Length: 283
Ligand SMILES: NC(=O)c1ccc[n+]([C@@H]2O[C@H](COP(=O)([O-])OP(=O)(O)OC[C@H]3O[C@@H](n4cnc5c(N)ncnc54)[C@H](O)[C@@H]3O)[C@@H](O)[C@H]2O)c1
Image (cartoon, rainbow, N blue to C red; front, side, top):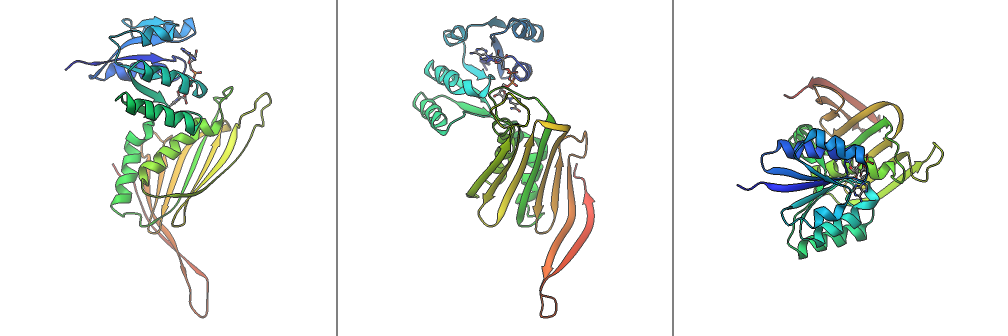
């Protein structure tokens, strides 16, 4: 079968990972790398000596042999570059966040549909083992009715100009939530953020609260200002709770057989009953 030829645009921090992963995959062949910075082009050549490199995005658009373009530039450029890819009748792979406005997202979706092209937004977590395990545990009703989701996604940096910590990090949690709960409707969203480090006009630390129907709420803390890296999700259920610690080298998922029931009777109208059982680490 003919391999799909790919060009990667944006070879800063994340783009080289795309070059590596597409190269390792037997269905893709990376033929182009594009960036505005010479050093980044040189680095791509070291990863894949056969890659053609350029600073001019139009060279990729004009190559009739190129099937797909992957955009890994900063978020505010996604809409414009993505539109040009689809207008040149090539499939589009685009990094999260897809676009920075709903209008742009809809325009790209419409264009892909009209031109009969694939449009893939890179949400890596929805293909990730621990998230698939959480999905399995939900579907098998192991934890009971889900009652809350919390996430701590913190690090020292990477502080970025013109990029908001919510746009940078929240897509990971939102993609996980939409994957785990495709049918749950959102009732309300609240965000509060701030820019404690000077010279910025975008949030560097923020809390996002997403309220779903049936009393299920996600609390997401996002920060580029933390001394420690945390990637810690808790999914609480009425019967059990799941902890997903992505920093842990092994044991990323733990199932805690813990829960709280509130008992009510005439004598004690509010009596919390705590239940503590085993902790299971699934393989
Ligand atoms: N899926 C993930 O888990 C994941 C992880 C990290 C970053 N990302 C996403 O990847 C994207 C890039 O992030 P990054 O941290 O690598 O940013 P970066 O700033 O390190 O790299 C972006 C690169 O794009 C280049 N660029 C900008 N405009 C260009 C143009 N018109 N033509 C060619 N090159 C151009 C810049 O020179 C720069 O080297 C962002 O959307 C980010 O959210 C995704």
